[in-house]
Length: 112
Image (cartoon, rainbow, N blue to C red; front, side):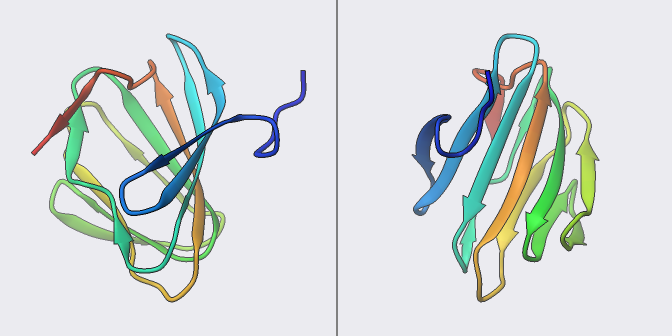
């Protein structure tokens, strides 16, 4: 079955940010997320899940273990388990990105 933002399970997180579950099972999660300007995720880490963030649209800022990383369209970064990270949209437009987690990060998040 084909999946897209139009037919995927949608949820709202943080400060009016959107997420769409493209793949959602115990072993793998793929989420298409959108953040409006001047929003941020809370700083956190995952005990078991490794993640990969890949920017589809716009310019994103992610702080990984205290290091600021700027990502533009078609760039990504791998986040190992137990690594504190926080995504920001410091730009004037929406950003869209994929968050791929293996295994699924549900219930595996520790907020700092």
